Amino acid sequence: MQRLIKMGLPLVVAVAMSACGTTYELPTLDETDAHRAKLLFEEGQSEGARRQLSNSAAERRFNRVKAKIAPVGNAMCKEVAKDKPDMRCDVDVAIDRKMKVRNAYFTYQDNAPIIRVTMPLLKDSASDDEIAFVIGHEYGHLIGKHIEKQQTQALVGALILGTIAAAAGASADYYDPSLVDSSMAIGAAVGSMAYSQTYELESDTVGTYITHAAGYDPVEGAKFFARPEDTKSEAGNLSFWGTHPPDEKWVATVLATIEQIEAKVALKKKQQ
Image 1 (tube, helix red, strand yellow):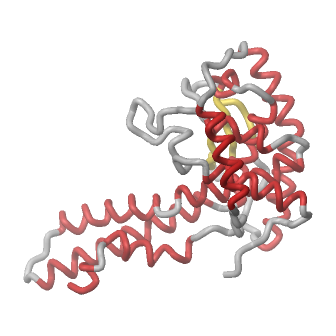
Image 2 (cartoon, helix red, strand yellow):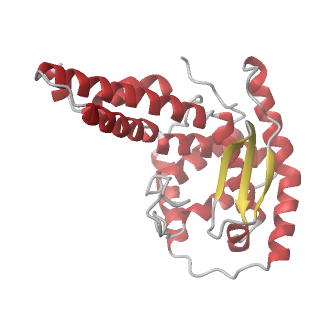
């Protein structure tokens, strides 16, 4: 057990999480993708303040985009769900009118999948492509079953660190339940974050397929994420931008995915 502890707790958790990776193969990035992504990322980072849409214009943009992209996202989900009878694809896509920050999210409400886009984000958008990519990206979280995987990772992480703490206490002839409890809390936090950025890249990949199939430009849409924004909110939580890798890697992922689409390469499931 001492040898296990010396390996480092994050490493132990990471090894245990290896079965909770992405569902689909992420595209292979080459030097051309990296170079183009760097230029696009720099372009986005140099962008100044945007002209805000009115509430009515923002809502019209949302309704226009939703009408085209929701059927595509639902259809892709249903295709994936053929071998997952417990997977629901009747996604409710709507505007979150209460949240006062620019955000979009996928979650479950009463066990039903929902996607929400806040009004501040809609008002800050510069094109239909951007909103299409944002919604497509959130469908990626549903199709990749990221919430379910994060829950599994959190549970495994908590059990591993709790077990290590209990064994360490036993080897020292004492048992400290508070140490075990705190270790399990840390393990759950580490476990749930283990693949967060990898899942974001998978959502970008799936979202690119959905956005393109709906008739929008994923590259133009992805520029929304490239802007210089704080990675944390005022409350100290990761912002909408902070969950993505803090570099141009995700832009390169979108570009490489477009190359796959143009080459008629379908989205591929990973070999389990």
